[in-house]
Image (cartoon, rainbow, N blue to C red; front, side, top):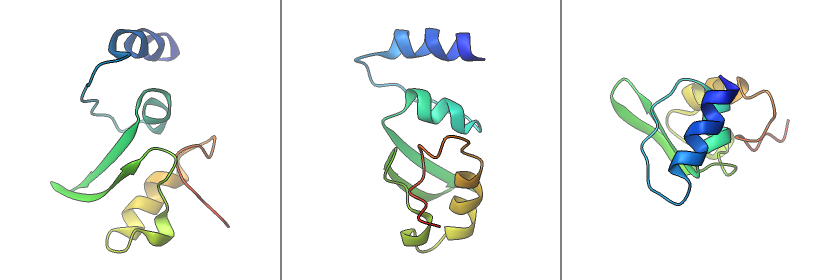
Length: 80
């Protein structure tokens, strides 16, 4: 998985790309921004590193559950 991320990151560097994933590590390694989709509806969008589940408003539970899976704390701004 790490090797695949490295190859993909190299291929898309300087280009726009759409990455669809359920893996937070993919997002933190390759994305500049995040659009979180729940049941076909945009639940939240923001630049990676500026996602704040407490300020997300509607869809907060879904966003928080996604953020809690981030092992490095890079994706979410968690002040707990």
